[in-house]
Image: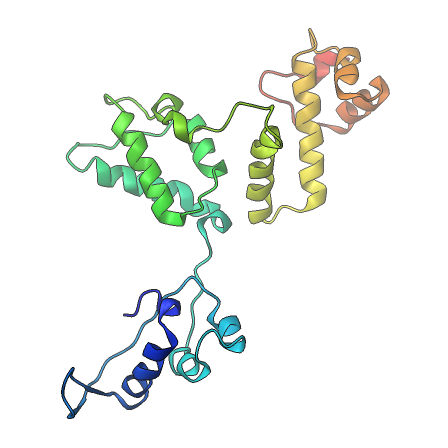
Amino acid sequence: FLDEVGELPLRLQAELLRVVQEKAYKRLGSNIWHGTQFRLICATNRDLSKEQSEGKFRSDFYYRIACWTCKLPPLRERPDDIVPLARHFIRHFTAEEEEPPEIDDAVLEYLKAREYPGNVRDLKHLIYRIMCRHVGRGPITTGDIPETDRPSSDVGQKGDHLEPLEAAVRLALSRGIGLKDIGRAAEDIAISIALQGSGNGRSTRAARKLGVTERTIQKRIKEGITPARGIDPESSR
């Protein structure tokens, strides 16, 4: 197994050609060739096909090792794996306990919306930090998330206030939801929230908050919106 094969210098790639092609090698300081049998597996985070075409990776060595390739998408492109992996790591870090703790719904949403630049290792280290703070047999809550891992609440920073929205859109796209449905759902949620904070769900105040006409609000209510928690659309009429 050659891990990070893309990091091999060109000179070493040339020396490995005979080993891979002829299944023969010389021991260090020896002139005697020895035969060997092995199955070679390589791993890299680089695009070797592109690099060999640019001369950054030996083409002859590339075509000897690229018999069959398997691309593992980053964790952000397979969000359905996040929660099962998180539960697996929780069981790993609580192996001495009878049962691992449950995960609060708010923490589940946080885990699914978070970016993982370090992929699975990033998630594992995050769960480790969370479990270091978790005390007792109760569920894992947002209080167990270290301050350094919590989403920034400083909306004064450029674009910070859009990060949760961006994460939600990424999640929707990864699950095959199209632009039209995403836009419709965003409008429904915005209307529902505006109604929720407008005193008895009055559509006049909701329309003022959203910068639209009251007629627009009433039309969307008649068409049917997915209300936010605790909202009865009928009460706004």
